[in-house]
Amino acid sequence: MAINRVDAIRSLHKGSYHKATEDNIDWKDGHTTTDAENSAIDAELVRLQALDSYQAPRKAKYDLLNQFEMRFDDQANSTTTWVDAINAIKAAHPKP
Image (cartoon, rainbow, N blue to C red):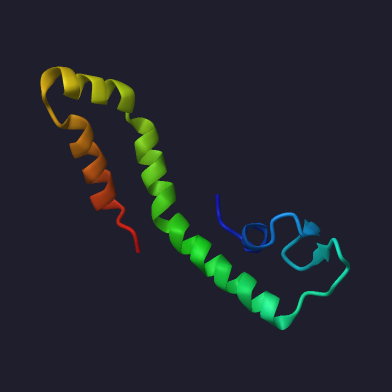
């Protein structure tokens, strides 16, 4: 899922608007979006997109692992298969 301006608005202004689209924000108190708010929304959009650039691929890889079974097997067999798999995913998709 691509992160968009509405996601940034939701992140910054939880519950303070009725409806948001890429072009318009319907604020609960009726005020008009200021340039400062637009700048903050744009900055939050950039921040969320940077987070998503590594989090989404990591999550997809994590979801493919049977982590509970891996951890149980590692404990039972004194191995590090689960830790090795997690470290490989983190190395392949590092934080920016």
